[in-house]
Length: 230
Image 1 (cartoon, one colour):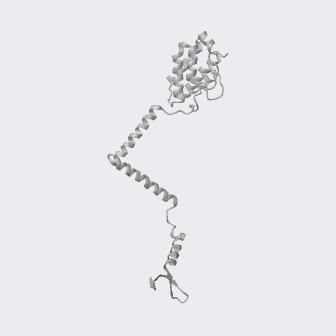
Image 2 (image 1 turned 30 degrees about the horizontal axis):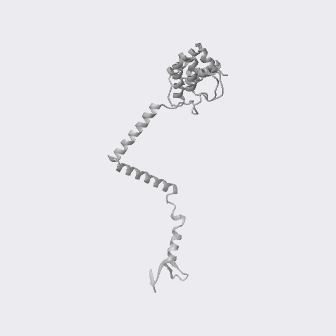
């Protein structure tokens, strides 16, 4: 570094044609150094943008845990205890509500979620699911068979969008002796279809028995006439 008349210059390892050192002013020297250091050869081992992002994210998560453990009684051990309790509560709710079974309807509240089928076709589907141990689907199909059978007997008017509860309430007017069983079957259908509950064989057999009993039951004439389509 040389000071000449108030001007600061930097001596770089540059030489002229006669091998005499060349003095370069400080600003151009810095710019030349920056250009040299910006060459890719000096940055081959630098972390990638993704690596830098991951590193910052991990530091951020670590900072959150440090802050939470500092604010939680017992420090990190207390924080872990809270996490374990929260997971236990989630597991208890999952066990209580059950797991939605494959094949259960996830649509609206309509009893029938596909094209029109006869009561016997629904019964056949229910028997097939029951033979495979698929009690959710078997119960659903048997409840549909009950409602479709009542429609075929003109004890219920065919109505798109009817729910299981509505069908049970309407059917109870012409079949009052089975009003309680109809409401229970509709509730089981709703629990399985929309509530995430799991049916078992006994639940299915109750709906199956109701279907058979209704087939043998004569309706109350006044109520049946009132429920028939005009």
